[in-house]
Image 1 (tube, one colour):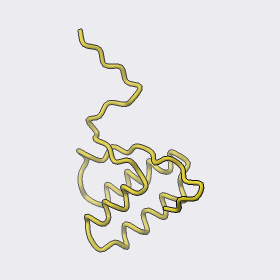
Image 2 (tube, helix red, strand yellow):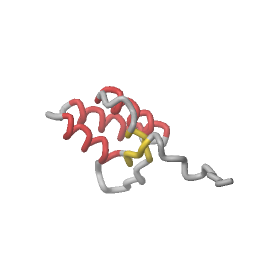
Image 3 (cartoon, helix red, strand yellow):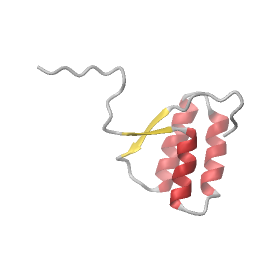
Image 4 (spheres, helix red, strand yellow):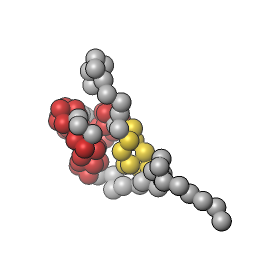
Length: 82
């Protein structure tokens, strides 16, 4: 991803999802598009499918989104202990 005019990476809950690379790239791409980063979504997808290993593909996804857990509560979600 180009460092010039770089937007902050959006959070994308991938940990705990089906680990199939097609699923993960789809979730990450959708997250980018929802955050107005359609160009980055296309760029990431091309790089992932051009990669030579699963680990490399995950690294590329991580360059575009902050990989979070599906179990992490949203930042604006209030948890109260009663």
